Length: 326
Image (tube, rainbow, N blue to C red; front, side):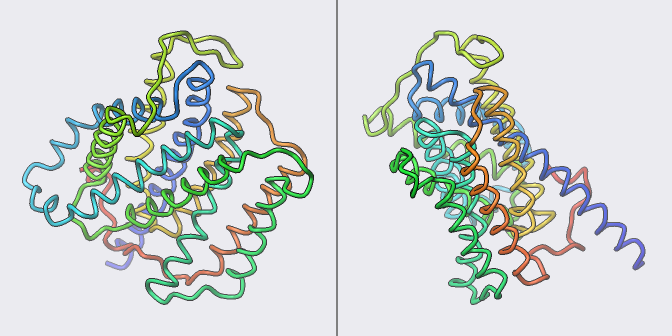
């Protein structure tokens, strides 16, 4: 019996890691695709709204199929679903797109991925899970790295509004890790992603119609470093691959690994974003920025290592692979 349980734990962790790296790779390309759209004349609001509508429509039928007989779980978790849709989905994506409109994709994402520190801080304030010495040192190292990355002392121009947008994306990402890891809701991962994206798409559309969120788009071709594409290609890519697929993989991996481990593995998204930023846009950080970014990653790793060993996932409760998306 113990052998079976251990095999289930190993399988759950391995598949969780595969899903987590897949999510990081998918999420990592969103900023590069979106920056091309914005350089072509799209506003951040229009780009993220198109992204969310494409993803919501892709997941609509799978979401309805997954929710057959589980509408009671939707009613019980209505508040959490709305919070997920507005913060973990809408705020994170909109703030990130606003940030990459005025700063490099990799820098914006590095700021966003100080989210694990925010997760630790929230768990400390909310649950009394006080970080250890390594966690505190890690937070300080990440803060120093952030200062170097933004080149505050060199006189280089880093848009302060972009920094604020990136920090807003960080709050949204922290919410994503905290809510995605909840396995007690009775909601299938694909349903949580689909409902959250639908809520976000509706909310952004209402804000656009009301004139609160500027909506500007164009059907002109979009130029990237490797060539020019019709406008609908990056829209579909950012909606299907970098959103629908990414959120489903992210939620599945977080439920298998727990919010702490999943947020740690998701740091690989930074590497993916830097790679896609270079391949698509020719963006590369300077030497000082690269060193600061490395310190941010080291600091986050120290924060993660300073956390309790026990994670917020029950390995014995890991679903079988065929149950993961249902």
